Amino acid sequence: MDIIDAIILGIIQGLTEFLPVSSSGHLELGSAILGDTKLPEESMMFTVVLHFATALSTILVFRRDLAEIFKGLFQFKWNEETKFSIKIIISMIPAAIVGVFFNDQLEQFFGGKIVFVGCMLLLTAVLLYLADKAKNTDKPVSFGNAFLVGISQAIAILPGISRSGATISTSVLLGIDKSKAARFSFLMVVPLILGKIAKDILDGGLAYNPESFGYLSAGFIAAFVAGYFACTWMIALVRRSKLTYFSIYCAIVGLIAIGVGLYL
Image (cartoon, rainbow, N blue to C red):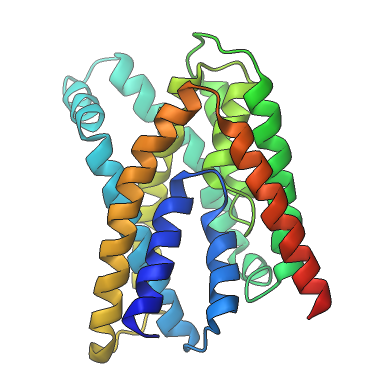
């Protein structure tokens, strides 16, 4: 992989991690188009670096929210910050279970299965359309809602299903305020990403080659910058109920992916 390819994939990851169009699905399609021939271990290292970059961009965007949460937690009281933190933990349970116990099965859905990615993008399109038509409310995230949204996040591990799209859509369809839904969706993924990175490091499945420093750095910077702007933009779009545009986009890309996959 050269630096240009790394920047392109970094931008794709940064944008699609927050925009509801599936980062994993687009990385699969992008890798197929660019002719990804890296060793699996090197590919995993690049993926981890990109996800770490987007996690940091989320932390930067929500730095004030996170500061308030940590401040409230250290008061050791049953306050809103403590409740919110517990909801985040509850939302992580389904994805953590799937990631730990079904990781080998999940890997079978990756690796250039373009038709499958296309079908999942069509599913994402349906979810976004339904969410955009839902009425906005001022309902907060409940403990039960947090678990249901967590199930959506677990399902979104599949390539082609947008994590942000699935979690925000599920939240909105449950009647949760759109701004609160977007905030919860973005914050709930940070500990999950960091946990996944820690697991990959501890498993020893990452291969670092000093010669790869250049493209890893380029991919990291591209993903971080793109992720920061995409996260900020997405929050504004959810508030203004503009998800239908992404629904149309996912439907078009999904149909193209299915067509190309069947043709090849």
